[in-house]
Each structure stands twice: as C-alpha cells, then as structure tokens.
Image (cartoon, rainbow, N blue to C red):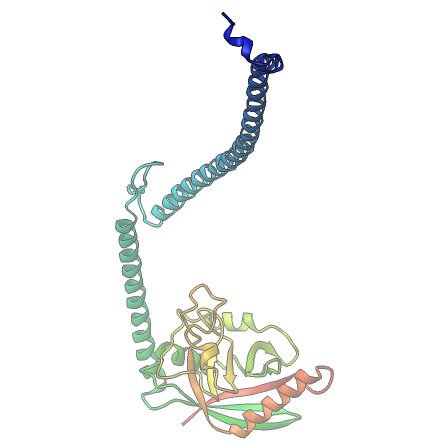
Length: 324
C-alpha cells in the first residue's frame, strides 16, 4: 500500500518543511519589532511626562517662593497694624486701657468714636474760649473807641510828600478781637515810620521795620503788643480787594492790604502750609477813600518786581491816626 505522502511531490514537501521551520523566527522578529516600538513609544511618553513634571516643579517652586514672600508681607502687615493700633490708642489720655496685645482683637470703631468725641469736646472748649476773648475785646473797644464805625487814616511819605487813604474797620460784632487789636496798635502809634514793602503782586505788606531797615519788634513788645490770641475770621467779611488782613498764625502784628480779591488765597483752606489749613487770615478793615493811592502803590510794587535794582522797594508809613 502506497504511503499517503508518496503522492505529494518532494519539492512541495521540502518547501512546507522550510516554511514550518521559518515561522518561529518570523514570530520572534515580529515580537521583537513590536517590543521595540512599544519601548520607543514608552520612552517618548516618559520624556513628555518628565518635561511636564519639570514644568510642574518650576511652577511649584514659584508658588512656594510667592507664598513665602506673601507670608513675610502678611507678618509685616500684622506688625504695622499692631503699631498703628498702639499709636491710635495713644491719642487718648490716661493709662491707655484700650491698648491691645499683639494678636488680640482690636475694636477700632469704638476707639475712633472716643477720639472723635474727645476732639469735638476740645474744639467746643476752644470755641468757648475764643468767644470769651471776642466778648472781652468787644467791650474794651466800645470803652476805648466808642460804638460808631471806626476809621483810620494812613499817611504815606513818598519823596517828601504825604499821600493818604482812609480805612474803615470791619463791623465790631463780626471781628471784635482783630479790630480792637489793630485799633490799640494805632492808639500806641507803633506803626509810625514803618514801611510797606513792594515784594508781592497781590498784597502790600506792612512790615515791622522802620525806614532805615531796623527791626521794630522790641517797640511792639514794649507796648505789650504780641500776636492775636486766635485767627479770627468771618465769612461775612472776606478778603476782597482793598481789604486789610493779618498774616501768620494766629496772626499779627504785621498786616497787609489786598490789591486783588484774595478770598481763595487768604480765606479758609487757602493757607495749606499751616497745620490747621481750614483756618483763615483775619480780615479786619477796608480802604473806603484813596483807592488811587493804593493802586499807585501797587504799580510801584509791580515795577519793583520787574527790576529790583531801580526805584524804591518800599514806601514809608508816616503815621496812622484815628479819625471821626
């Protein structure tokens, strides 16, 4: 009986055997290729993850540094707040019972209310004292100068000639302290042989100097004339053109004549260089006769400002006298 393989040609049988023997090798190669591809893909993925991780690390480091800086700022803010609270409580007198320890709750609203109430009470006390001084000056002025409107005449010496203008004092009920203060100076003749300096384009300034340039403060002190007790002011008597005002705080004895409307400059809020900038220069009189003389003096001032080396830089106040 013939073998069943005897009918298959020999070359076919040989090729089949070779194919069968090659299959394991192909399988191994395919597995190797697949493994290599998988490894390469995995390495690529790892590199991508490493880059992402490095980016996260950098961001984490940045956030960590920012947190440290913010913690330092918060600590500094807490320290500053504690210092501010301590200073705040010192505005109250006594043993500072409202002072809090660092980290304790701070009732700023209640303390602020106490400080405001205290300041209001002190302001009321000051206003009462000012009203008392004003009343005393009112009565003294009535006693010394009568109850009629007060007028004084300025006599100026210019090139051996006398030029005059008349000033009427503010109503006594509006500016009693300032009016009485100035009238007492006129009565004592302390402004005789003083000067108006030509150094400004909006006022004529009367200085405590004589025509020789000597300081006259000792003369004023000898007459018991110092500064005003407070910077008296009335909204009903502003710094219009041709009005007179006291400079400084609380004001006087030096004064000036406004050669323009200086309400914004010398009125409330106009003197920002002073600690109490809401105050104002006292305005206590107004030129009612001789405006031309004042205008002429202002022209001399403007010329002096243009060329300080030519012309007179001051005008002599020969005298100031009370007139009826």
